[in-house]
Image (cartoon, rainbow, N blue to C red; front, side, top):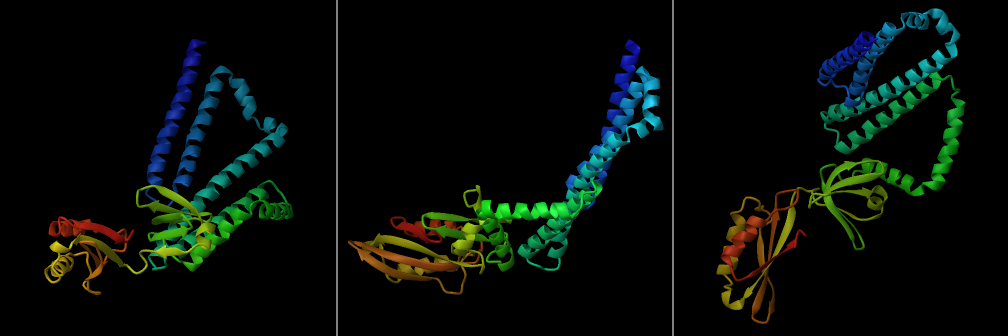
Length: 335
């Protein structure tokens, strides 16, 4: 009895170990292909299940071989054809669902990558990939229905009633979906652009990481990720900071009139700007007097920078501070 128990446990562990080994070899091989990780892991689970089932049957045979033989006999299956049929349909449905999701994810990734080589913009690539994703999932759903021999009219009727219910109950969600499709088609900004969205006292500033059907994900300058509903973007003005690839910067410099020389001070500031790599030569940098307050004079320094992302003009500020150590230096643009 003890020996039989030990052999049974050893057989199950051996089958499990064999399954894990086969899964590792298969998954490592499939990772080098275009298949999505979802379908790779699903195939890996199936590979583990096969030797594990055989191991359980072998362990059970050690305890009661006639029972296993009788269980595997065709007559038993004929008596339980209804249960077996249901189980087989269930297994088919699960495999089809896993396969469909894996194929959909794989095609989505391939579409985004392959269409990108033809210079189609990323918004359109994303839209096409998601349409294919939904199409594959829909085909998979109808395929599963055919496994259960459900007439197509039933799910269509249910879907119609469900759609009416959703339209009434989830108007805001549908509004976001429509706005998401509009953003992908109209392309007011692209993935990778830095945008400002302002509504009253609410302002979102960040780099566009993804445009989903319900919300757009932004990576803020401070590092956080924020999901902005597409309807909010649709209803409010959008400032695309990276559309033209260059931006204007304005620095306010306030210093004592005694420290100001109309020719020397302005000339030295312009020299700093002209010698800085980030500052564009055209349009020309300018320095103008913005006003007088008591014994102080306010200057406005304007220049354009070549970067299309968040502008870092710290080096320029340091050089201006070294030139005018007693002056107040404040960045006005970009904020």
